[in-house]
Length: 261
Image 1: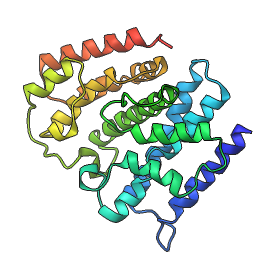
Image 2: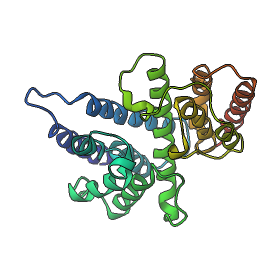
Image 3: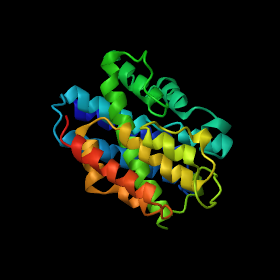
Image 4: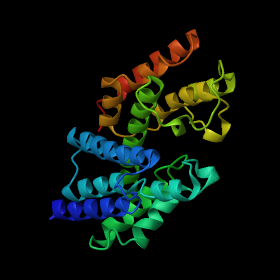
């Protein structure tokens, strides 16, 4: 039953994406990149769930639906505003949640699952999970936030290694030398950095280290450790012993948390 529900949602999602294709059937580059990102978030969600966790079938369906629809508004965002910057367009988490309702994507699922997916999608891009989120919806919110962050880490690494061409990945930030001590201190204090506080590409890369403190599932830590995602980010930053120490601390956190539920 749950497989059939997801298949229908999958088909509805792709039918919606197809409305953004040109006469030749192609998506513009930025939209194709977001479709690829969605597919990767779905794959990572499956990887996290496969590594234990004791998830019920209902949980697995809910988490997979969150992954599928978390960025569904990105196609409209590019069409209308030609940017992925929420500050210059709309909050894509809020808009994705709205589209789930407007486009009737989940009308055939239970209200329990539908409301959970809508809320998890709405908060997936927020600075932190809001305190007023219903407790029953928190596991889904944590799952989609984990999978999204891990997919973004992979994407950022590929871009700065020269394997991706989408310039929006760098958030329109200048590629100037060094980074501010304030961003480093914020990360070392285990606090996430707001995008609006970033002044250059190096600070964006450095801010990614704070994400280790915003992962939730043991399998998420294990994946980041196994792929040495933060080690690869460190290699993209300038020589600085403070960054070497930050990487050692980050790897220690990953190792300690990888065995958690």
